[in-house]
Image (cartoon, rainbow, N blue to C red; front, top):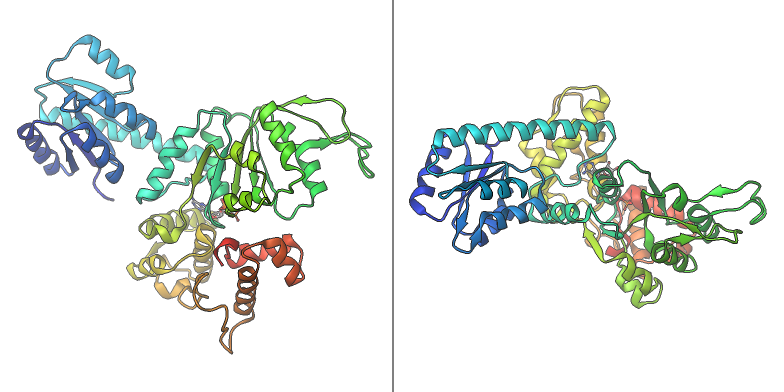
Length: 453
Ligand SMILES: Nc1ncnc2c1ncn2[C@@H]1O[C@H](COP(=O)(O)OP(=O)(O)OP(=O)(O)O)[C@@H](O)[C@H]1O
């Protein structure tokens, strides 16, 4: 395991160098900063496990840094040092979320003991939280250290406390559903329902009755009244996956439910009050759809004030080993096996592969490898990715090798049709002679993102 990272913020170079040398000698990885600005820059890039900050700095105080850090992480240990300790200041620092307030001169050994204790407490809290998340089936969407994933976590945490809708953008399999569930689990609505509906491939009638429910006799076959998801999700979170596929006739009704907090069941004459937080997701370019008038602009503006973009795996290869180990751990415990590790060569192969199907594909590859390989270490060849079809966009589609497998042919042909329809799945399904739903299922299995062709 790597050494804990400490961010040491102190503008007096001799004090800082002395402390840094002592902490380094005590098996901590130390990052130094001499101002608020430098501290925040370093914080974002190194993602430390603990912060030790002098109170007064050339461009502000460490309370300014603390306020920013708390927005990104609620439980990161933060210690403030000051030359002029006063009770008022100490009370304020603790109120603002500092873990300790120490008056200088601080003995390095005492500081080290404190740092270790806070790190240990945090580790225990994280272990407990991970255990309760696991019990609830919640995955951590922010594993890895890439700047893109750190930024995503920071943005997502800031959005937790509000009621505004959130729009999650990301390619197929990038983890949009996982992120939506994480937000629910950590939001003030976590004790209430989380309901989700995939808008892709549902007919207008079905989507409408699923969302808004209906009264008895509203249409042929409505033999009893039924609650819609908006009612089931009252006070909780409603997650609408693939919102770009929502029939245009339903979009104004959803907008009304969001703006006026009321909706009507089909066949009902009265409005019902509803309080939901909406999370919508899409792998389509909604802005383009708005321009092409296939998605309503008013609904788009309503749902896109808070937007989270999940980076595709190929944009953050440095995160892949950590993610893969985590997934291997999950699969191993599901299979009742001990921990399985990756050889350096396997890690390299995973990092070099472009992962068109993102985390879903990574999970599938690892699960398959674990089923086929009973040992406790996976080698590059066990992964079966070197002979996989190239990523979307690579020159494969127009010239399928003569001895291609059926799956390769299918993939290449679907990609070719999607290119012709500029990513429009409905049109592509018509050309291919299959139901839209079936095409979506094939896209998922093959790891194809419609917009990328
Ligand atoms: N953080 C994670 N840790 C482990 N596995 C993950 C993680 N995120 C996603 N996965 C895996 O990827 C699969 C797909 O995730 P999810 O359904 O959230 O993706 P999505 O972006 O919503 O996909 P789609 O575009 O098809 O709706 C999950 O079932 C899980 O196996």
